Image 1 (cartoon, helix red, strand yellow):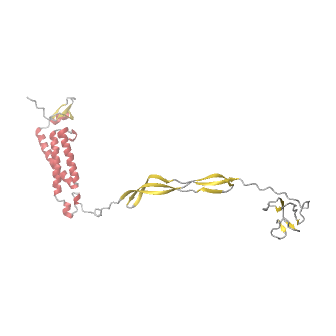
Image 2: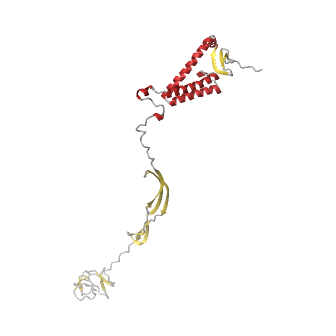
Length: 312
């Protein structure tokens, strides 16, 4: 024969004899109370406790209906959230564990919480179905749902057309400037220069990733760079050849000395197989520094222009 557990009530705390602990009919709960407080509570007449319980039940029912109606008038979301919260608390007390902190110590109180949730929903439904006094007076009632809200100027605006965005590639040819170098050229005279190799710019191909928004470029990113044609350096030759030394001066025969041809005056024209003007194109072997006046016969053909003055 099985023994039934004791009913739910306050019993001496097995861990602290100065306190009482609540037994919910199945297990000990976390609710405790001093011995004096529990004794006073136990001394209350049973009839008075039943009367208070009846009035409390009626008050909870009426309050639940009224609160549900108020929340439904304020917002449909509020009544739904409130009912869900009460349902969750009731299920926790009914299935998992009591919540003495909110006055729910037994599974019966969990069932009562579920009933309160149902009353909240019922009160909200009745309030939503009944016309609002403000609606009857001037049709300025708060809408019960989003569908009841009249369209406004902002809601009537047309939906903006999505801006087309495209991403593509673009290639660009960029010139690579050529370099300039010089070399020494011993075959050229000093102070002279000449370009022996013409410089040519190279070509570099750059590939970009381009982002276009509504036909306007908004971003460009370099993807790759490739040298298509290498540049050719310009080479300039600088001459380093020293100039030839000037010809040695030709010794001149002093005028008035012996060995001068009498056909000429103003300078001594030597008597030789041939005489040329100094600094001219003749090849000698003798030379005379002019000017020389012809006084006789120009046997050496020094007066080329025939004006009577040679080597002028």
